[in-house]
Length: 149
Image (cartoon, rainbow, N blue to C red; front, side):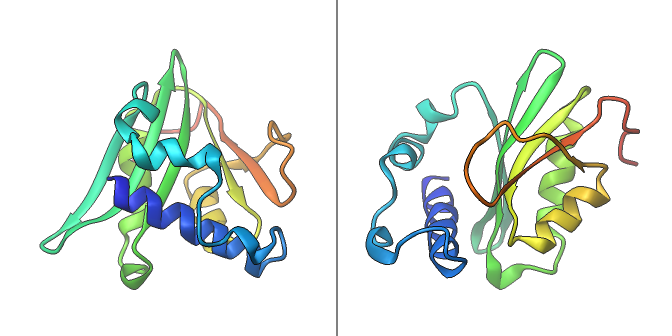
């Protein structure tokens, strides 16, 4: 899991540079705020449920969801870019949503159009931002959204 999260975070940092949200100077290392997720994911996600997508080659995707009372937050959702288009992200998101019964929230970078379309296909709507980072879209799936079939 640690390697999946590291790959996801490094990809995100590279995309921030590509989309002019960050300077290329720090690309080799993760920001300190992310280091704990990689070095000690068990502690970093102690209050979360982690689901992995597996193939015969091993883990190829991850989603981390934190459920707190009647609400949940998708913390990370990532699938190996070499396997995209095969439904891994959809399966991970659907599995995470199956753990929830109330409102679900998440944030996504504005340049991740395929991810935004996936979230919208599952009933997520853009919401007022709870995060002040430029380029980050906050989304919510209302509690009254029908369960997936």
